[in-house]
Every structure is written in C-alpha cells, then in structure tokens.
Amino acid sequence: MMTKQAQVMVVTPHPDDAEYGVAGTVARWTREGNDVIYVVCTNGDKGTNDANMKPGALVRIREQEQLAAAKLLGVREVIFLRYPDQTLEDTPEFRKKLVRLIRMYKPETVVTADPYRRYIWHRDHRITGQVTLDAIFPYARDSLSYPDLLKQGLHPHKVREILLWGSEEPNYRSNITDTFDIKVAALRCHKSQVGDSPSPDLEQWLRQRHKMMAEGEDYELAEAFHRVEIWR
Ligand SMILES: [Zn+2]
Image (cartoon, rainbow, N blue to C red; front, side, top):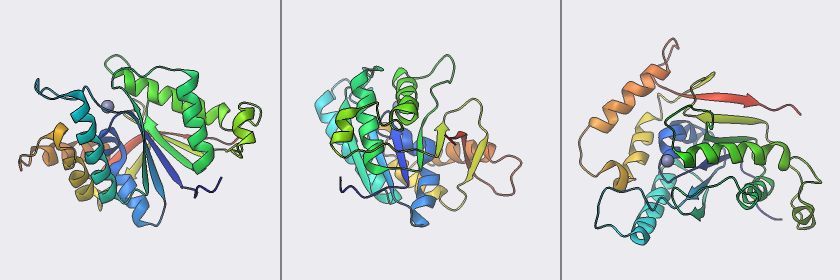
C-alpha cells in the first residue's frame, strides 16, 4: 500500500460537522505542517428545509461545500463514504471501511463525534463516534481481526490519541484564537446549511461558544474535546 501517512484523520458524520467540531484545530495542525484527512460518512441528503431541493442535487452541493471548506483549512484529502443521511448503522461493513482507512493512512490522532452525549444527539453522530472507536480499538490494532486486509498489505495500526467533539465531559482544550477566522470562513463554505447572508450572527454565536470553551485559559478561544490516549 503506497498511501502516504496522515498524522490526523477526522471522521465526520455529515458534511459540516467537522467544521463545527474541530476546524480551528485542523487549521492550526495544517499550518504546523501536519497532514490531515477527512472521512465524511454520510452524504447529507436530508439536510435541508427547502421542499424543492432534490436529494441528489443536495448531495452534489454538499460535497462541493465540504471540499471548499477542506481546501481552506489545508486538509490534504477528503474521502466520501456516501451513506445516505439518517441511515447510518453499526454494521460490520461500515466498521471494516473505517479499519481499512485507519490502516491505510496510519493516523496518530483520530477526531470524531462523542457517541456518549445523552438524549438529543443525531443518530448518525452517535453511530459514527461509536463505530470509529471500535474500528480504532481493537480492530485496526489486531493482526488477526481482518486476515483479508492483512493479505492486501494493510497491517495493524495503533492510533495514539482520540479527540471527541460534542462531549459532555470535555477534558482537553485546543487554542483556536489564531485560526478562528478560518474556522468561520470554512463554515461559511457550507452555504446550504448556514445560508449565504453576510449576517455576522454565525460568527458572534461561534465566538461566544468558543470563548466559553476557553474559560479559565490564558487565551480567548478554544475548541473542547474529550481526549483519550491509548497506550496499548
Ligand atoms: Zn451532523
């Protein structure tokens, strides 16, 4: 397998979730010279209130929006798994796709949605987070878990760190003061979701949110995660 390693893999349920969750940190990582790749699990084809919008057209729009946002952030590659929106399930097939990608790209850090947020949490978010955690440990790590992947040259890989956005128990904060503007610009690429009005509401709302996440730190704006380190 000749895939170039990426330090960071971001596994996002829908186009735009990664921008809300981790874009400020992604922009910092790429500025520092790290390779970041995105895996977008669903095609986002239910994400509209426009009764005239056809799902197929929405998929194409949202992929272009995701690519534009990723480009702004310096993301090296975007992989679309294209599961229909709101249909994601914890299946052996989905898990194996993620294991394959983890073994191909060998990320040190994987970022995804926290599956353990209670009550109101999009099912696709819960399932993406859960299946990603399972794919990392133990399936990507263990040589006997997928003999066919091993035969294809996809050797076991140990991810070292997991960052979960949307967590009710954040234990790790990342300084995004210098990259906040890029995060806002990346979110604005998702016009089908945030609208294209020049209104400063989105920016104000985000600034408030990330200020709260930075409370007690000596900088202004943070993204917050539940961080898990894996030693085995
Ligand atoms: Zn989402």
